[in-house]
Amino acid sequence: MAALSNPVNWILAAVLGYISYNYLTATPPPPPTPRPKMPTLVFREYTPKELAEFDGRTDDTRILMAIQGKVFDVTRGRNFYGP
Figure 1 (cartoon, helix red, strand yellow):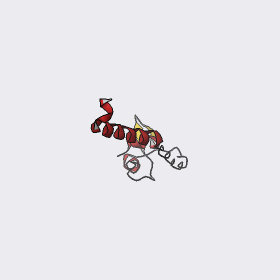
Figure 2 (figure 1 turned 180 degrees about the vertical axis):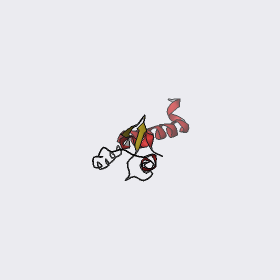
Figure 3 (figure 1 turned 135 degrees about the vertical axis):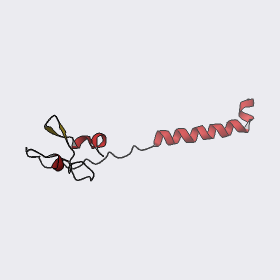
Figure 4 (figure 1 turned 45 degrees about the vertical axis):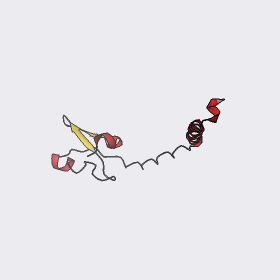
């Protein structure tokens, strides 16, 4: 019964109750909206200068990467490959 008469215990119980209530009643954040698909890229050969334009500096441009003469569209991995 001594635990019920101590005001510190009441304060701790109130704080714990408040935190528990907020944790259990929190609404999840809305899912992110997907980006619109870009049109299909037509196969062609690129010079290094042309390829440099596709570096993804703006959200509406593609990110292209060339490895051993093959060009890959890595736009879907913008967070990993982006500038």
